[in-house]
Length: 305
Image (cartoon, rainbow, N blue to C red; front, side, top):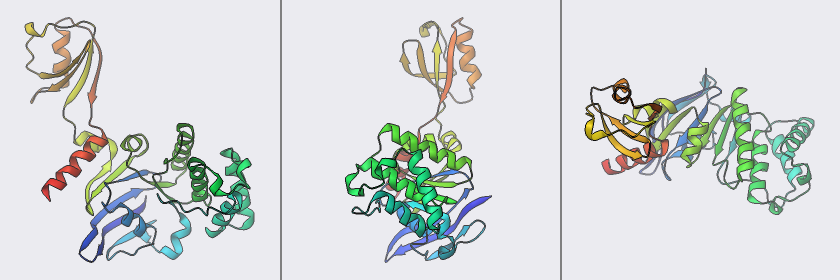
């Protein structure tokens, strides 16, 4: 089942096309990366998905029916990059207030807040004002306030900003756990290594248009350059070896990066070394990173413009 489906969405500001005919689907329980450079249209997309903006054209389906912002807002948790905590308000009081805004009763809100404060070791923060907390501590409060009502759709914009590695891992594990229990997550960040680690699927947008859309593994396979890393137990003498099947790109002691030639197979690479009685200790394909794909595709559209 797809929790969210966007069909031919458009949003224009005067002559500027912020979102120009974008479509995609997000399966329930998936972690979906929304990627693009600054000004690509990501924020406008998120604001339409949360009902803050209405599209000029197109349709948003939520749980297989037309999205109704007034009805569906309580099923969405949105943590924007520009944080929205009240600086002078006490942490516990603020968490209770935000939970009740999302439809929880006072009793439910207290139970949820106490559960999460205990889980994140935040009980000592209850009477502190938000302005007394570090940026990372505020981030934890913001995250908890966003998920207290157990949203069906959770939207996180740069959720690890300001967090140390320990707390970043804590939030990451909660993201994985929520996904496993059925929450659908839209994850927006400029950190491509986080996307590769966390996301199942991505969409890449630039200048309001969709460039790529699909599972992370399939996208990396699509842009592969037929490069392989091979480790060997002895250094071969390539002067005495015909290398018809591959080209050596790099050499690092007993490891080589090679590029497979046209009409050759990976078995040809392995047999080339085995026939020379050179032991192969490791062999792996090198796929392009999302960061490399991101840069290449955005630069391409910029040059084509």
